[in-house]
Amino acid sequence: MQQLALDIGLATGPTLASYLAGPNLAALEHLVLWSGNPTRSPVPTYLWGSPGSGKTHLLKGVREALRGQGAHVGWLDASVHEPPPFSEQWAAVMLDEVHLYTATQQHAAFNWFVNAQTHQRWVLAAGELPPAQLQLREDLRTRLGWGHVFGLQVLTEPERRAVLRQEADARGVFLGDEVMDFMLTRFSRDLGTLMQLLNQLDGYALQTQRAITVPLVKSMLENL
Image (cartoon, rainbow, N blue to C red; front, side, top):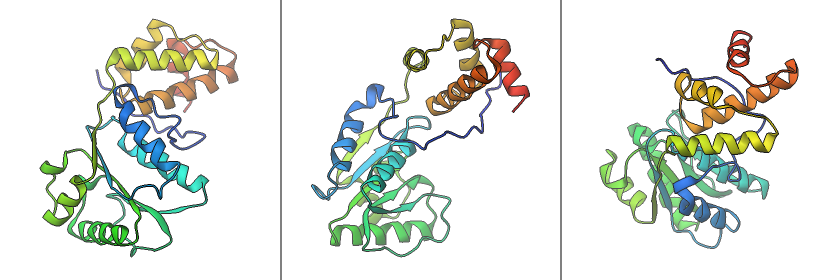
């Protein structure tokens, strides 16, 4: 059965508090500790893992935490085709989707990395592969791997079910097994997508004054 990816907007962006760590608790705790005091250590951090493990969520969560402190950060992902020059006003450099970088992006990322080290700024990067397997220019690849490296795992289905149940309970809504089965078989199993779906379902149920059931899910999709 084909799984659907939803284009549903969240009321707020990803945060460290909203990241459901599961087996990735060590990485989350490291980022929470660092983002509370980004000047404490300039040693870079690299996150790697398959799609759905939460790499981008964590990078954006750290960015939001720093912005909340009034700090500016440099951000580079595969969609930024013309990266700006490094800015000394940045408190940190975020490099997402490094496994997809073009030669131009790799050049910019290396420049940012060197400048970040010179100015004692933190570098947080992420990609789908461990550093040794990245098909990048050697000087960038080795720098990505010399600091803290965390391999992230995708939550198992029982863990995803437990998280969805916990979030539904926190919202005061009942999420039955039939609805859970429907969500996990018909939609992307990426936890971020599932949480967005639950957020949309909760709002739609309140709007229509109905319980969350499979017919409600189908009705919501027809009205998107």
